[in-house]
Length: 248
Length: 248
DNA sequence: GGAATAGTGTCTGTAAGACAATATAGA
DNA sequence: TCTATATTGTCTTACAGACACTATTCC
Image 1 (cartoon, each protein chain N blue to C red):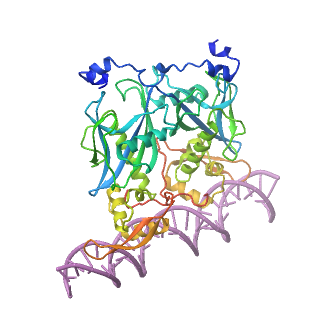
Image 2 (cartoon, each protein chain N blue to C red):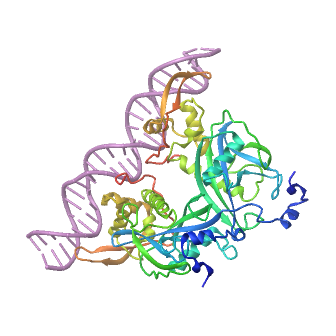
């Protein structure tokens, strides 16, 4: 019979509860922050100031602030804002990895989020725990840097999730600046999917989704001007009933 | 300058690492174990032997065994086997909930999995921490029991995820006994989706997925006998390119 | 007019929805 | 035969793919 059985009530139990932190795994949050520029999908990396993996590049992440974070998502948002200044963005929980070996300090669990940011108006600041911060381009599901912990694998899985979801959602809209053309948006789909798309099909889909509104403005780079659109207010991510087949 | 900066190497840092310097949230795994019988989607519940929420019903779950579990999924599998005797089943990580309030003992993180089991050949045993165990039928995304912690909300979200995925995958195949008819399989789809399906469309989809093989046997309940099928060996979940629209 | 990019028309193919038609058992 | 369930036929509809065609700019 354990000591636990002697408590008379929930209140009694809680009063005497001793959180023995020694048998708990380390718990953290990592955020794969994506943006698109220079015709490439980019991910935000920080250079670690401290051990372990001191000086190595890593995904943005950190520990829960048990006093100030109300939820796991708060931790993710706090870290995102600390590094980019961005308060709101598309943020989605991706998956959680927990095992004995991913951290040399022992059993460790990390919940991975991914964020999609327009590239404009972002001021990167290394912030706490980092000596450097930068965007790194993703080529063949990788960055050229050798990442700390299992972050290369986390990145690979996050990219896979993003790609997969782009095949049947309007997610890339969250990567666009305030005003953009349909050509711009198609280009972003193509960059993420690493595949060209049929213009006609693409425009049909976007029209169906009904997530954009025309502006009166046009943009002209060189030849025929293109109409500028903006994302409608308070629009949810649109889920198409069919996936883009041509990009698989 | 923190003490950390005095370490000379990764090895030096790790040798001196004290796992208590950061406060850690409690970390657990919960498993929403689904099956289908009596024309109803069912979920496995255990009655808690200990505080908090002593005597209340809850989802199957537990803490990570830092010495014996290699991964988070190991924890889920261990708990699944402890309660059902089932060693292998469809098991998918669903999401992770972490916040200050879900556990009266304080900051707590739980990673939720869902499992799909055929109903046959399962021996329920309460096991450690439970005084009772049973299947409970899901009606309107709920069970009638008032569940411990935030388990009602976890259940609701897990059901939503399952429903959504059934619209474009062959997941219900994992709920079937060894041999079953196409009518049986359609019925399971319909129970989960809470919607009747068009037989012709359903059969076309299943044929396309190519996940079943005919047996030579037929089953006759009363009227015309139906052909018995079994799931092909080593078949992955099939992802359809279109969702079932009639059930939305 | 020619080149380049923006944007449309339209035909084909695939698979879902709807529902009628046929098949095979017991009573 | 009639009834119930299993199974198939087939017409319609929605939307993706393919690609030709038109529109608007600069040179």
